[in-house]
Image (cartoon, rainbow, N blue to C red; front, side):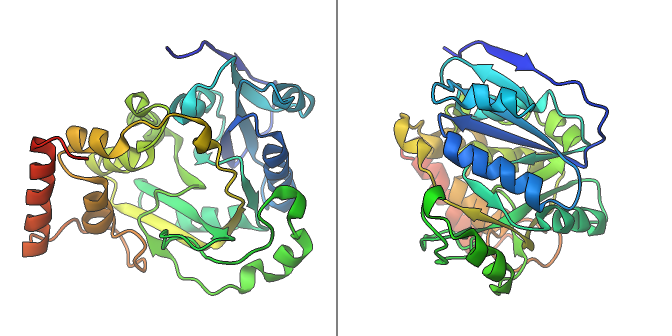
Length: 297
């Protein structure tokens, strides 16, 4: 059962460029660092909106003291509601989805807005690029570049001197946070699908919803950078079976979406053309149909 969510807007005549939405679950140290970095390193004025899950570590009181728009649930509502609810308080034309364990590098917003203005379409989904301390299978992140695995060990001065010296190209696929898209498009697709609560698989599901809405411009912007601490709050929850849910809903697997539709992590070359009807793609579709029919994820 989803906990009741309350809405707490602040009065403001400010015209923000981005409305930055950040769900946070008893993760005040990271959240405070994230908000401070947005305030300190942004080129433009932005609205910051926090969804406070529980907040029994002082998060709610801190958010109130900071004068931030926020929503609140007395227990963890998950990231789907955690993004959907506060997005209703957004005042900007563009909505940025952010994790709470990011440190936003200088001019992160300048490069995102530049990419938006160069897109040549109103149907787009654009991401910044994560710098991570540990190597993973995510080819869309710069790693390993260790500036500190925790906030209290973060070498901010070293990061500020070196973050923009790391070579990396613009990439295809978007999907990863921080992610910006037109608020009207977010509303049109219904935000994140709450059937994926507490949230595993909700991001690729959003990409597929955008695809079916006609979006083909999925871009990761290398110059717009954040440092990702990786606080691992997802370890506290029971995961939904994201792969199975996605396969049941869309008749293709998440890996098929990434490889054949979004070309995830490949160098960005413009709008996605869609899967070519190759033997490899046909075999992948057959594999997905078999997995669905026998109940595999």
